[in-house]
Figure 1: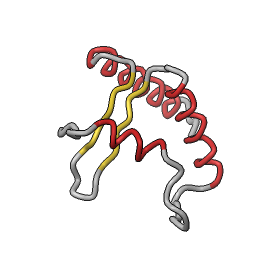
Figure 2: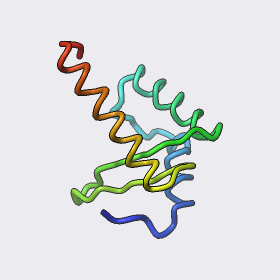
Figure 3: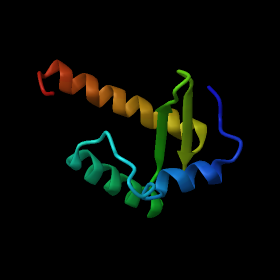
Length: 90
């Protein structure tokens, strides 16, 4: 994985409202959920953000977490998702 050289520029881009007239591929409820997540990061909550770039490389950012804490958080997400799938929840 590659880490961006200018993490501040990445954060500013991710937290910006987007350019005027720029269309989003997200559904309105997903936009609202993303806004809540960004608000949580701004409030100091721990986060791991992973985006697959156009060249199939993963870009990632850790917020308020060490690499070990980020791996632990990802493990919890995978475990919870596995439980939901096993229970038939989508």
